Amino acid sequence: MSNETNNIALEHLRRIRDDLSMLKDDMHDLKSRMSTVEVSTGQIITMIGGLNQ
Image (cartoon, rainbow, N blue to C red; front, side, top):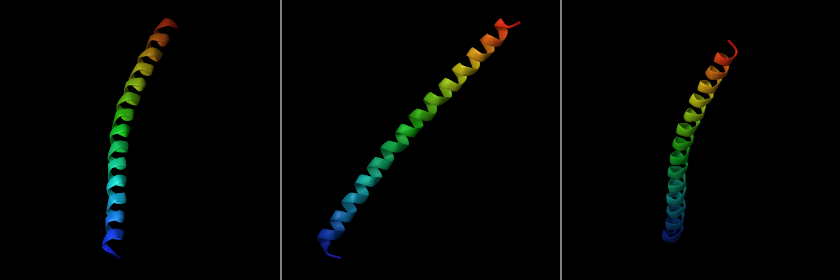
């Protein structure tokens, strides 16, 4: 491979790495938000269960 081809390949790999890093951050955020939704849903179900008694 020529030097220019290597540089192009490395640049693509860097961009993929950067995109992957952003996806990891987004997934972490989504997991945290989903946990909050699950807790809130559990609290609502508990409150509704208390109304039926």
